[in-house]
Structure formats: C-alpha cells, structure tokens
Amino acid sequence: MSGYAKVTAMVEHIMTETARVMKGTKHENDWLVYHDALSLMTMCLPEDHPLKFSLSTPSRMTSAFERLLYSGWPTSDRICQDIRKVFTKAMPQILAADGGYVAGLANRNGWGRRQ
Image (tube, rainbow, N blue to C red; front, side, top):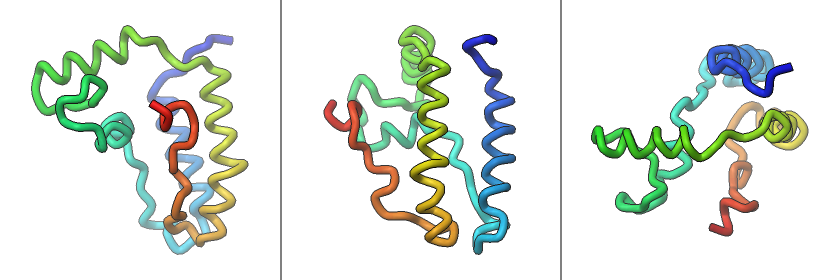
C-alpha cells in the first residue's frame, strides 16, 4: 500500500463523511468545510513572520509553496492518528452540541502551541 493518497480522494472522503455525521443535526443542510487550512492556521502570525502562509503576492505564494514542497509530509500513520482523533474526541462533542460550535475544541495544546 502506498504511503500517499490523492488530494481529490481525501476531499471526497471529507465531504462524504461530513455529510454523514451532520445528518440529523440542525446543521444537516448548512454545514461548511474550510479548505484553506494553512491560511487559517497561520492567520494569527504577524504579516512579516517567516512561517506565515499567504497567497497575497507572487513572492509570498512562492515562499508558501516552496515550504510545503521541501519541508516533507506527514506520514500516513500520523494522518490516520489525526483522523482517528476527530472521530473519538471531536465528533462526539460536536454531535452533543447538535452540530454547533464547541468552545475550546480546536485549541492547540501540543508541539505547535509551544513554538
């Protein structure tokens, strides 16, 4: 089995599974998936921070994509670990909130927070 997956297959899986778990909640017909995760994850960094992910200029786009291409990728095991956390920790809390916002759910408490 390959250690890589097509992005299109991953997105299709995200959409299918999100629709499945949102079925029967008050947000069954109006849920959203945010696709620009890197911009969201780095939005609190100052504009001139070297790790800021931005597509605002050609130079910043080049920098962002070079960092993605040359920094390596998470392993399949790590991706699976993160996905399992969604179903074992996050999803029960979201369902208990009837598909709504859960305060503190996406707080960073690991390596990234300590940086």
